[in-house]
Length: 269
Image 1 (cartoon, rainbow, N blue to C red):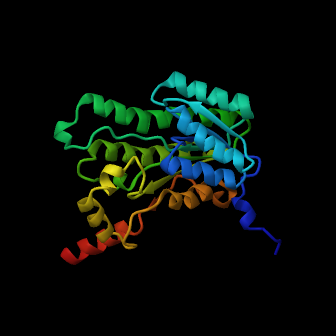
Image 2: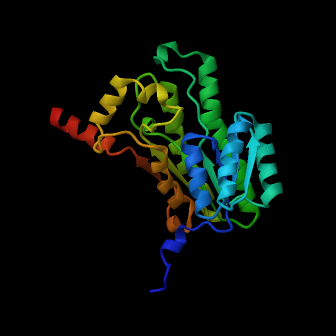
Image 3: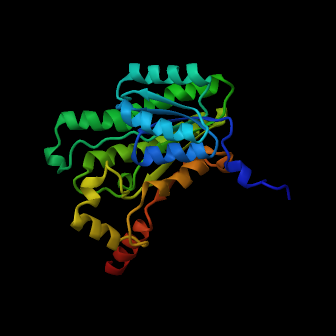
């Protein structure tokens, strides 16, 4: 057996990854993980200081990092982001659609049009059109690439108060399947990750609430919520040649929450 025959497939030497929402939380952890595996990173979010801090961490690893301020709800900013990435590196091999939002926590009876538009505009529309722009570039350079969409456990099992967010994340799972089916002919693989509750600033309103946190942990096989670093392994797998025969799939990283919920329901019914 050749030494490194399997582990080398996880290396990303010579690859370029674009990570949206890459300045903090899950996006930051994934960006650092991909850089550690050898990739140069394009970081995108709406605030430059946070982007520059993450870019500096990547640079200290000996990798190149390009921070770009962009709100991917807007198509001109998507096009500008892709242009800046390709001007700097010449190509994009990996796209991580991590940027997301949830401006409201309420019953669907109380959701206003503005909240719907903001949530679907970033979580779904932005993901679709950035994937389209990067996918075209991947196809035109001869094919090959990996797109990783960030869905959520709530896109499969909705949480009360997060109705529109859950809808947007369910749509991401279907978007993943649609793109995978259409772009497989170009060797562009499209997969998704659906985390459960993760301890990030984005989800602080949930995990900082003792009632929600305790209930989540009680119904999770591992008995705890996730740290952002625990999402990196799945992203590295999907970004690399280790997953060369995987596309159209959603990896659920919920610490066994579904397993526990189903077990509980089976005992009731």
